[in-house]
Length: 420
Picture 1 (tube, rainbow, N blue to C red):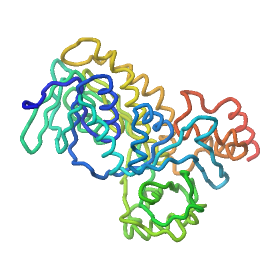
Picture 2 (tube, rainbow, N blue to C red):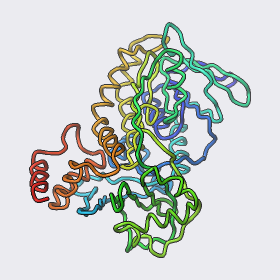
Picture 3 (cartoon, helix red, strand yellow):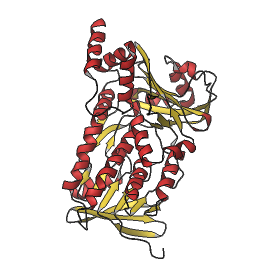
Picture 4 (spheres, rainbow, N blue to C red):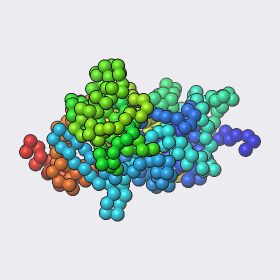
């Protein structure tokens, strides 16, 4: 094309999981999409690596799940949860349903998702492109202004999507210029570090994701196999210990993992592969995700404490909602920007489907220990396999809205609480 397009149906700022997923879903519906990112790919990003069952359902509907497996993604078929007075597992592939999760590092995951998006003729991808400003007309967003090596460029579209992470430039500029995207922050009480290990025996850790809670006050671990024969292991602990932890990252990571109920044995004989990564000190952030002509996806609109590994799945599930609603938005025929009254359906759907998980994250973030209700739920899941399966489906974001706990599960929780 001799002259680059300046007008699109949608502009997506941020090309990682949320942005590339939205680009795929919009392009499948025949939309012309500009996908931009300030980074160059492939590149790494701090991440939990985990796509829960609710997220893999979206990947499957998009037609990219098998491609991610070919890229090295490991499907986990079981989730094991361990605590001071509970230990249970739930299966994710049984009775004809395959709700297995996926574990894949960001270098491979993001590159594969971008490749899938760029396979659509309607998607134009520009990396090393820095957002400078939003184009605003009559109080609504009508496009972007950005910069790359060739200079400054302006692009217009009736829908601009900010999928540029928890420090979203789209959200910051929209807030400053048109008072959009109101936010609420709840600080996380924990710090998080993770690293890759090689040489983890199959007999110690199979195709499962393992989560541990409260082997020490406020502590937790997550372990899962990922690409290239590696295992990713993450540890969480009281953020007040972060400065001491940073004095010797590798030794302290191993020391914290070794304090665990079960992870120490799983990693016995394994060696650290590469450096130790930190997420830093984080917030749970809720943003009102829509304004005239623009919406926020993924961490830009709803960022959660990494403790439960929900970030990827929230991004994918919210992108799935955009894919379902977008046809009606574009049929309105408004040339400059899609009005917020139409985009409000996205907020309603996103919050109905994802806020139960966000609220659970907020509760876990504010207190270092498990709250009483969560402890009773874990204990109940340890008593009966059907309860373990129900708890696992909720943790994997597979439970329909407002369907957890079931009445049957609530009765078992009450029995567990009386026994305690």
